[in-house]
Amino acid sequence: MTFETLCKQVAHLLDEPEATISETENLLDRGLDSIRMMSLVESWRQDGVEVDFIALAENPTLSHWWELLSSAKRHA
Image (cartoon, rainbow, N blue to C red; front, side):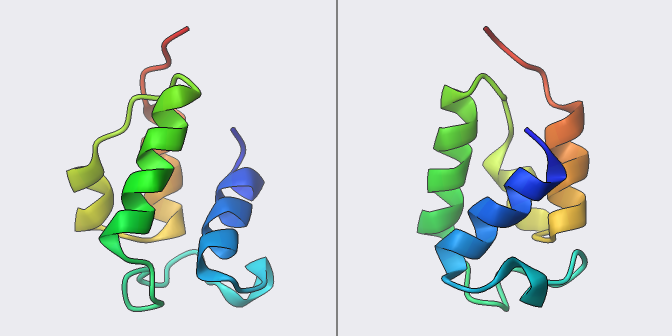
């Protein structure tokens, strides 16, 4: 996973161009709901990335999510 991939995934769920979403913008304020967040978590888990939904919800920004994802344990 790359930061660009994360941006594409979130932009797709919001049905908006990637360039319109700031790295520090609150994604919940932008319209991302918990159901779509959970679908991201499940997708990442299927790819072997263990990430905590609560940690994502506490600071719902691309920059924070990338911090969590890039440091997350990976499972084969």
